[in-house]
Length: 521
Image 1 (cartoon, rainbow, N blue to C red):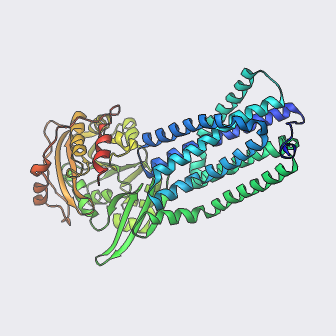
Image 2: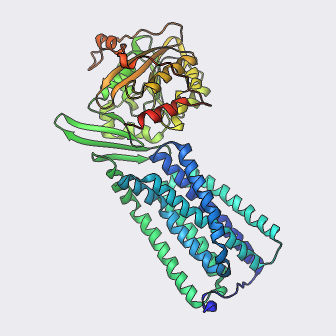
C-alpha cells in the first residue's frame, strides 16, 4: 500500500533535477514573502497603524514557521506527496487570504482575529516547506548537511528578495491586492506541481498521482474563480462598509478612495472617505474649507502652496482671489488628483479648481517636496489627514513644521488643520506646541462642522508675533465672518490650552495621542 502512494525517490538526470528543485525553492520563497507583505499591506490600508500590523504578521508567522518545521518531521517518509499537499494548500489559502480578510473586515468586523488565524496557517505551511525540500535535495544527490543547508537557504533568501521587490513594484500596481495574491497562489501551485509531477513523477504511485492531479486541478479552478469573481467581490464588500451608495472608488498604492452619495431633503450628500475615514460631506464642507483657507489669505497671497487637499476644495477657496497668481498643490496620491480632476461629483464641488490654469498640481510626498524645493510662499495651507497612522505622523512633526517655516515669505502665513480640540484635545494642543518648536508663532481657533463636530485649526507665521485672525474675502462667504472668527478664537473652560510635548520624527507623540483619543469614538 505504501508503494502505491509513494515509491522511493528516484529521478533521472540528478544534476538537472537538483537545479529544478532549487528553482522551486526560489519561487516558493518569493511567494511566501509576498503572502506576508500582502497581509501587512492590507492591514495598513484597512486598520492603519502599519507598525502594529507588521508586528502581528511577522511575530505570528515566524512562530508558526517554527511549529511547521517541527510538524514536518513525521511527513519526511512521504516527502513528495507531503510537499505537494502543502504547496496546494498554501496556494489556496495564500491566494485567498486577502479576499478572506477583506470579507472579515467588511462583513464581520473581526479583522484582527482573522489575521492571526490566517498568518498562523500560512506560517505553518511555509515552515514545513524547507525540511521537506531538504529531504528531497538529499535524496536527489547526497551531500554533506552543511552544504545542503547553505544551498537551500541561499536560494530561499534570494527568492525572498525578489518577492519583496515584486510586491510593491509589480504586483500591487498591476494586479492590486486581491488579484495579486490570487496570481501568486497560481504561481505557487504551478511551482509545486512542476516539482512533483515532472521532477519526481517516478516516485509517485498511480493512486497518489490521481489524487494529487485532482487536487491540483481543483486548486487552480478555485484560484481562477477567485480572479474572475474578485472585481464583483470587491465592489460588494466595499459597499457593505458604507451606509450610502458608492458612486466612485479607487484603490491606489497609497490608500482606498471611496466617494458615496445619498439623496436628502436638502439635496445630494456627497462624501469622500480615505481608508474608511470621512474627509468631507458636501452638506457642510464649506464650513471647514472657508475656515481653513480664508484666515490665511487675509495677508499677502500672490503665491500660495497647498499641501494635501487633493479633492480640490481648499484650492477652490484660494482661486476665488483674483490676485492669487501662483498656486501650487502638492498631493501624494496621483489617483486622488485624477479623481479631483475628472469625477463629476467632485468637479462640481471644487468648481473645476484642479483644472484651473493658475494651479500647478504636483504628485509628490509633501515632506520630501519641501526638502527639495527652495521656493517661498505668501500662504501655505496644510490640509492633511489626521495623524493616526505612521505615514501621516511625520507631517505633524517639528521637522515638518520647520520646513514649512523655511518656505514662508516675509509676512507670510501658514494654516494647519489640527483635528478636534473637543474630541482630541491632547492631539490638538500637541500640534500647536510642535508648530512652535518648528519656529512658527501660532493662533489657535475652532469652528463647528456638523459632520465632524468641534474642529480646530492653527494659523501661524514665521515671526515673533502670532498672526491676527481676520478675513478679507473677495466675495461674501457662506459661513465665515469677522464675528465668527472672533468667537472661533475663544475656547471654553473645559477645553483650555494643554501643555503638551512636541512631536518629532524620532518620537511621534502625536501618533499615540491621536490613536488613544479617537479610539473611544
